[in-house]
Amino acid sequence: QKLSLRRTKTLGFNHETHPAFLHRTLYMFPPDSKFRISLAYFVTDNRVENFILAIIVLSCVVLAIDNPSQQSERKMTAIYAVEVVVTTIFTIEVVLKVIVFGFIQKPGSYLRDK
Image: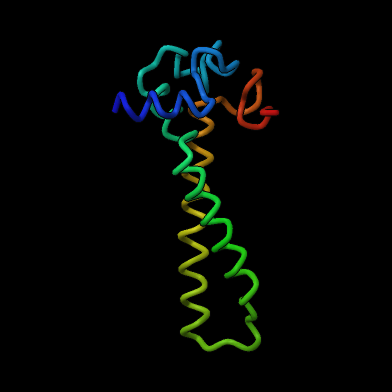
């Protein structure tokens, strides 16, 4: 775990200098929360970000092949299942990033990021 944290720090994210870590998030998670700090290094890891990008590409491909008027019931069911999984992954990503960075109120928050 120390190796992973050290490697992530060298890639640019450091909770000690990030503006979101000057305040609590969601009025519950203090800046020095080990849970929040660990989660921050997880959600900013390049592997996680690349996974999210791959899910975005998958979502685009599914959107491009989706044509309800010319599809079998089986294909429509498969596309629906992929859409549910993709939406669930995106929802989890948003919730984790809001826990780490806050939603919108303070500098460095999820919706206020540069």
